[in-house]
Amino acid sequence: MGILRTIIWVLLTAVLIIFAMANWQVVTVTIWPGWEAETKLPIVIITSFLIGLLPMWIALRTTRWSMKRRLDTSERQLADLRAMANRPADPAPPATAPVNDLPPAPTDLFPTDKP
Image (tube, rainbow, N blue to C red; front, top):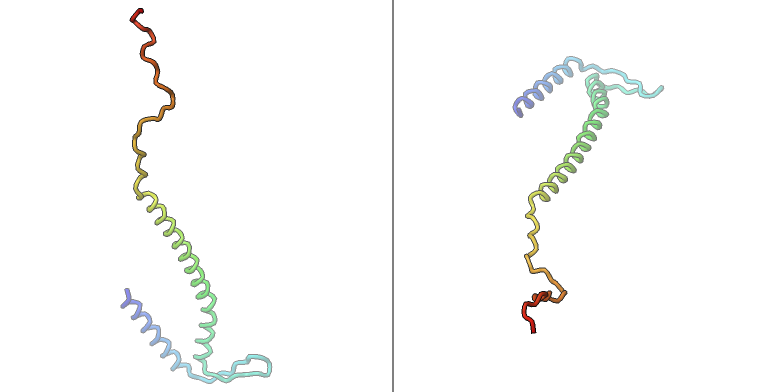
């Protein structure tokens, strides 16, 4: 994929250079009334392209930044949930005899011996 991107950039640069060489003419650009600049045509075209590209580049960067923040938050929540699901269960309390504060019940409620 990287080689394809490199080929595209090389072709785009070659086309831009050929265009600039074919149109290397002096043009007069009126900036304010009474203030004019003489510059080459390819410089005017490339500058206007870059100025037009700037708002979309800013929008792309802010969108990527926002999505990265949301993804980081989701990954952090997922890691927390996985940690909670994988933690060992609390051990059961040891079985002890119930504590009874009452005195033992008498076993001879019905005595069989007569005095």
